[in-house]
Image 1 (cartoon, one colour):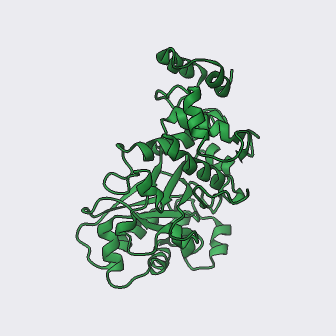
Image 2: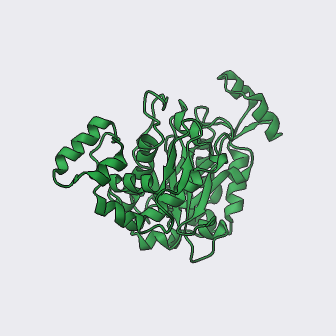
Image 3: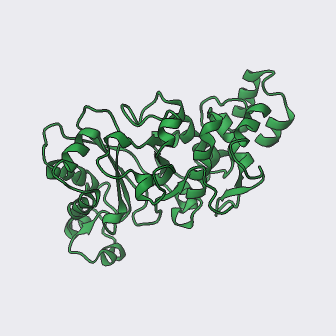
Amino acid sequence: MSIENLATTHDVEGDALAAIEYCYEQGWTDGLPVVPPEVGRIEAMLAMEGRPPETVIATHPATGNECTIMSAAVNAVMAGCLPEYFPVIVAALEAANEPGYNYHASTASTGGSAQLLVVSGPAVVDLGMNSAGNVFGPGNRANATIGRAMRLIVLNVFEMIPGISDQSTQGHPGKYSFCIAERADRCPWAPLHVEQGYGEDISSVTVFAGAGFGNVENHGGNTPESILDCVADSMANLGAITGGQSVVILSPEHAEIVAGTGWSRADAQSYLFEQAKRSVADMKSVAKFVPEVYEKQGREDMHRGMGAEDILITVAGADAGGHSAFIPSWSRSRGSLMQHKPIGVCIDC
């Protein structure tokens, strides 16, 4: 019996604990209990989307499995989402469905990536998302359940099962949920949704196949170079450096220092790209030299990414604290490219 059939033909609320256990038995959870997909909850979720429930919004290129709006709604209910979160999930699925994201490799590879979502725009406030303290941690329903819904869809719809089709060597906690919001009130540059061309009143979600999170600490630096050199050093450590893309989430404290002397986001991106490098000799010494990536970069050293545009920089976190984050791509090259879509806007309708 499919999840959809269970939800629409059985009174799962009649015995919620039994329904939860049934979901465990069927392998429909991420290891944690799920919310029983009762019909009324699914209908409330579907009411947030104007297209028919059978509309396909994402397809896994290897399994051939299709995610319909109905499938997404069922898994959003199971993840614990409120209906108003559903447009974010739909937009994120449509973004991940773009060929450049590489849905198969990013969910099957030994690299063990997770779908990092970065939400920008009015939706952050409207949905009560956390963009401040403990932004990557627990405690916020929207952040936690939106990210979890994406993972449940990978498991239940696309059948990327850990140890079987998902060949992740170690994985990381982001594979439970990996969703944050941009902190626009402390970002010294244009917010992502504006930079992406959607305008002030339209929110966006960016999807990135992210490997493990790296904390970048600097409590004493007071120049852009002192902060960004620490970030670049993290980006260029021998265990992390590849030709893949990067996401850098600056804390408000670090962002204020970087932008305080007039540095633009583009300036920071260019600086990081130029500094996040290792010599060819270093790369060869650990058998990580990739000739084709080196040739494409066309530079003396091996750099993180192919250019400054491969580094996304934004701001999130608490007001105080010299802690930022670097999240590398799972791919050693640009095998998966971050994608973004507007939220609640049906481009192809």
